[in-house]
Length: 205
Image 1 (cartoon, rainbow, N blue to C red):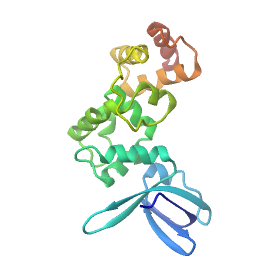
Image 2 (image 1 turned 90 degrees about the vertical axis):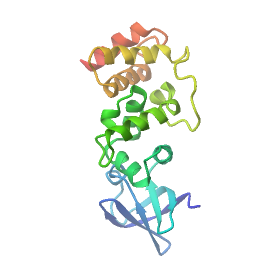
Image 3 (image 1 turned 45 degrees about the horizontal axis):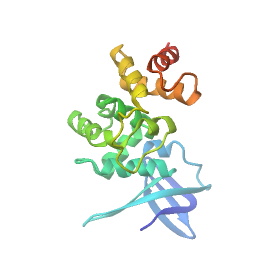
Image 4 (image 1 turned 30 degrees about the vertical axis):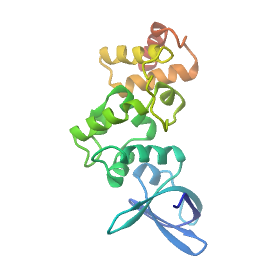
């Protein structure tokens, strides 16, 4: 209904910003991640928005990028996670951090968000795992469709390298970040698991 608001920042609070759009002030709920990157009061801002409609309330949630908005929509699609829960997760983890954690099965990192317990975090990883592919990790984007071939031939070396690093004692998030950097820098043959693993270990040391 409201795709975005584009105006001047009138007020910034902990989890909320008021945006003046041609004389009309819009209350927009924001995550800590978004709040940290907002311009100063009196400066222009464009927030991509999601309107949550309930029987007793209408709340507008805002994000500085379409990517963050897309991930928010994925999160609220998980059983047991509403808009406030999704905002809480995005306040302690960036979209990229979430990609790393989901692909690596690192529910422990996700459970650190306020109000998100162990079981909810595990459910989130389970339900979103097939919606995040290795390509998303490498390019830093959310796939809006199911990726049923996450373990396909093109992604297998990347996934195998991550699994090997986890077996060596690194967290799933650390492993995925290191592998992503290797792939992005093209510092190893992306079809050679051993080559990716060696370069990723150098990143971690």
